[in-house]
Amino acid sequence: QVQLVESGGGLVQPGGSLRLSCAASGRFSRINVMGWYRQAPGKQRDLVATITSGGTTNYADSVKGRFTIARDNAKKTVHLQMNSLKPEDTAVYYCKANVFSVVTGPSDYWGQGTQVTVSS
Image 1 (tube, rainbow, N blue to C red):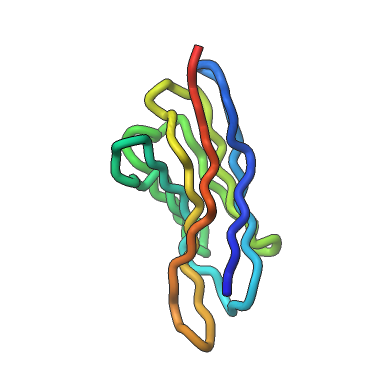
Image 2: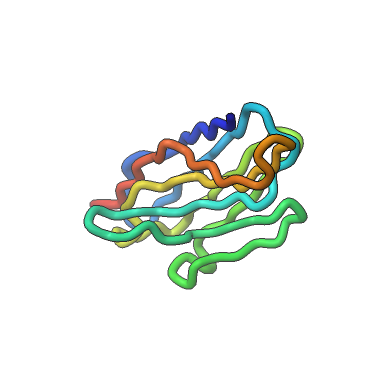
């Protein structure tokens, strides 16, 4: 089993910054794509950013130029640096990892979510 532990959420004013972190642990051979998703009340869960094991990144149009995703393969962590935050960014942010294990092959795992609130 794989566990993803998130941290870094909180309350911030418009234009401010937050840095989210997610650490993976458990039994697995390799972490493939890691990413961040977000879900506001009454909305579906949307992709924010992803990063491959080789460092290739992908961003939702709404966060391009403001958010940066990065990973540390040795520490098995992924980070999301969020700058120039807007009220529209308010949501629960979830970490996701596609993990390969000998037993189950490739499988997706989700973190517990962390609340980000952007308000004046």
